[in-house]
Image (cartoon, rainbow, N blue to C red):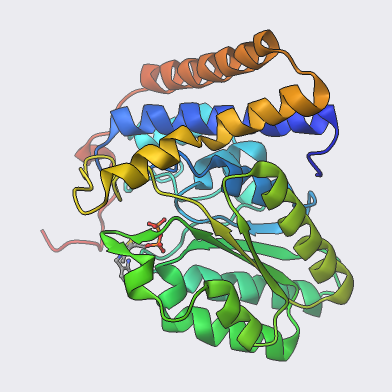
Length: 318
Ligand SMILES: Cc1ncc(C[n+]2csc(CCOP(=O)(O)OP(=O)(O)O)c2C)c(N)n1
């Protein structure tokens, strides 16, 4: 989806607002949650560029809204988060990284960083083998780009001409390590270029730039049946997890990022370019908050799972 018409722009804005509302609730629910607050332009701009049958591998920081965009009911996501009856994970894992298979949103299947990139390339290979026109789209963090899996997969994706779009959601941190200290060279996109993959680096906090860059990468990968790469510069406004006070970073960097909020920025764009007024924007924000609050209430009404609900046969010797 381009974000250049007013309808598409409104739809994308709504997804950003829903994402923010989901993440704000998740922060309240668990100090161990990995929030994506401030990375909405990168996430929505990337995954709104997908066609319906494309196979999606979102980064863990941003997976929830992508699942919702592909039709997973929000209450289902909160059931997982809250260990409620009906949770797809049956209470065994609190983070809803189980994905949404019906919507082709793949799970974050390994707690290790890197395998998801290889799995996306594997899915792209399967699509090619079956003669399908769909592609895979995979997002991951800058820290993940430092893994061996990343480099092995890019080499193989280029060599086998796999239809996969790689998107580095560069939020400048890998837990407490700044990207500037962890990654050699000037950009992750340059590494991809070194493997012969067409690659660009754009402002990941500007929804229009993200949607244009990823949209072009998607078009290229779909028509050429070969990989492409986009690096998005964004900023992680919370700690690595909700309870992390992130004392390791400069306060001024955070303040700069907060002042350049991607949602506010896109609202200003909608007003300047399409004349969307403040009331309509406020209505979308309210609608998003209500949608999320209702889903949370629905999930909370379900029975809380206990240890007795877990079938641990063969898991622990007790
Ligand atoms: C192979 C591997 N190394 C280290 C870790 C520990 N770890 C978990 S999350 C994380 C940070 C990842 O940073 P990034 O990929 O930039 O994503 P972000 O959390 O910033 O969105 C690290 C180092 C891991 N899970 N797997």
